[in-house]
Length: 257
Image (cartoon, rainbow, N blue to C red; front, side, top):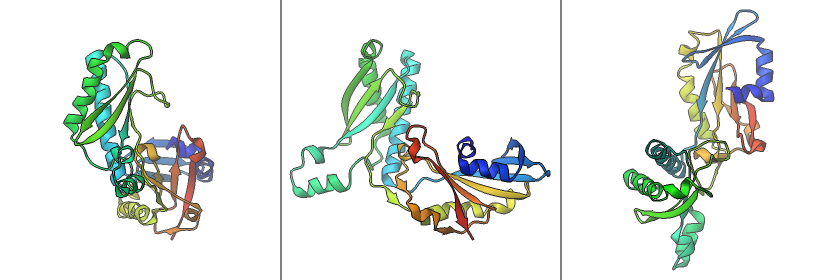
């Protein structure tokens, strides 16, 4: 919510409603009190487009984060992990068909054996613990799981956001303007509007759009400002906030009917 309220659109919303206080609740997520003693609800939901690549990315991030916790618990060492793909189709393609497949269907899209992949990463940590505790505190090795090659980079330094966790470098084509899927998300919330209004006088919907680092392989063009969505909320907002690539940030009031 703080990302939305920091945006120009969020500031206008806050001032227009003359808000004086805020309380975190459930269904809706927040209740705001106004100068004229009205209760304004704000329900927040996340939109991630359906994608095999996105599902695979989140699956790998979960495994990598478990390995980070293992390093902390077993060796008292904070680490960051990057999982990348060695695509044998790209580097060892034997036919034009394999080359085209690598170009038009890159990246991870399968769900891999969690136990085998996690134990493989933990083995790299265990064998290289001395290297990770002394300069340059970095190792890179490859492991093979289900005939897939994973490049595992491990560093005893925080990532670009100052966190010790796992990131996955996954290539994928981005869906453009997934309006139908976004409408489905709004429809799911429309079904609950009567319950929200039991706690407030009117209710707004804020949809948070994670970026590609979370496996959300979609983007919106200028057509988003013209598209009309069916929403039962007072107003519906779409917000994207990236702390690294700030040029991608936006908060937009969607057209409703």
